[in-house]
Length: 319
Ligand SMILES: Cc1cc2nc3c(=O)[nH]c(=O)nc-3n(C[C@H](O)[C@H](O)[C@H](O)COP(=O)(O)O)c2cc1C
Image (cartoon, rainbow, N blue to C red; front, side, top):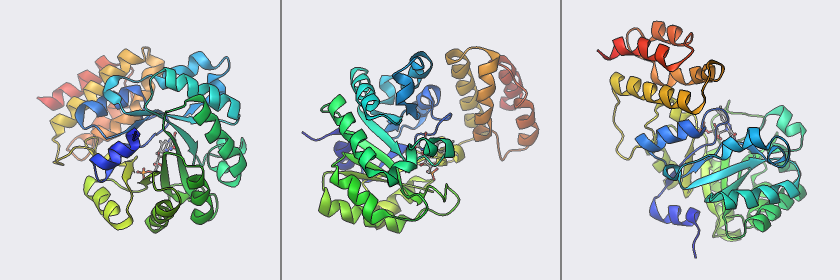
């Protein structure tokens, strides 16, 4: 039987994935995107396995909330202890996730200091133990890895080769090193090398390329040029929340502002309280730009404490 990654790779060439972005692609944002222009696959935010296996459980488990509308959705996890990966894999399976993805690409210093994220590129023994633990914890569920090309220098040939030899079901390759963060253009030629390695070492592994893609037509080009099965889009969603729409078109100021209102309303319903609403402010720039009065409106929105205040500012712009 083929897994959902392989099914996606057959159905759409390339298939498109919304990147996990901590603090951004939360439950509410995914609901919104699933409503307006849904990608072929979604990921949860970065969820810590140690937290889920300790007293941190209550605080962390909301990260695993999803709805049927968001499926297929993959539980995106990080941590240090393989035994906790086993436990969380079991949990993710019980919760009905479509797959489990292990983060081996995060470049954040504190995460790397713990030996997690991109640091795993230099610790293949631990990386393999995590993959095995997830496979054993959630038999039958596809296991994938999201990673980069290296830590300080590009090591595609050794690192991606190693991951392919673990026969994971999918690998998302962010075409930059951890050191490069997102500051340089992605090295798509290296992702192309990874695809060729896949063809010989593990033909059933699905490869998703990631880095700098902000439009559907660009995704088609990298599919053609480098042979990736899927393309992941992250920050492109900030430029256009409809980035996954099948027939791209311009969206009006009214559509943008209506979407902002829908987002703010759902945000308040999901995370009640003024303190939490403050985190909604980071999304405003997605919707408010390039129209007359946008700069002033942005400044005013940054002072808002709840949905009613946002609505009062937006309504006059919709008349
Ligand atoms: C705000 C933000 C948060 C991110 N959080 C995560 C994360 O939790 N896990 C992860 O694997 N990548 C994370 N990333 C990286 C993205 O998933 C993606 O790999 C990166 O943005 C490159 O894709 P892009 O050029 O399409 O934006 C994050 C990126 C941003 C901008």
